[in-house]
Amino acid sequence: MTEEKLRDVGITRLRPGQYEATNPRGGKLVFGRGEDDDAFTPVELLLTAIAGCSAIDVDLITSKRAEPTRFELRMEGQKIRDEHGNRLTDLVLSFDVEFADDDGGHAAAAVLPRAVQQSHDRLCTVSRTVEVGTPVAVRVD
Image 1: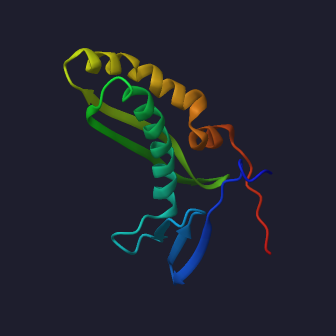
Image 2: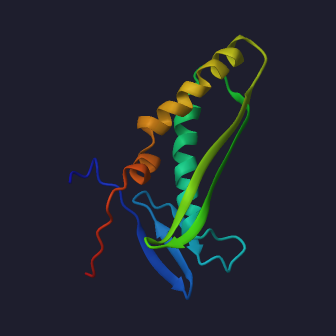
Image 3: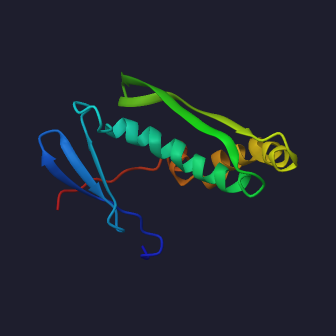
């Protein structure tokens, strides 16, 4: 795989139940089991990744026409345990976006549904990976 296409993060254990992810640019994010009020769990990070990916796509498309006056998303799912193990079902991403009542705002609002659909159908790498069901290989080095 070429470096241009490779995406990766490193994970370091900080203490029992708390970890730090580092990206190639040096960004850091602490996460854990949900015992710390300010740290995300891995499931919350997955939901954030899905919503964040589409938020970026939709924002790039709509803000070419007008800046939003409100741009909020909610990503939710139900955690279950079944014959496939622990997983999320009923994933729903909701957009709550508003633009000014002017020509630019009307233009941005007009492209919003299409932008959301484009992100879902082909642009967002995260949700596309989840929906397609890409296998995850694991190994011990």
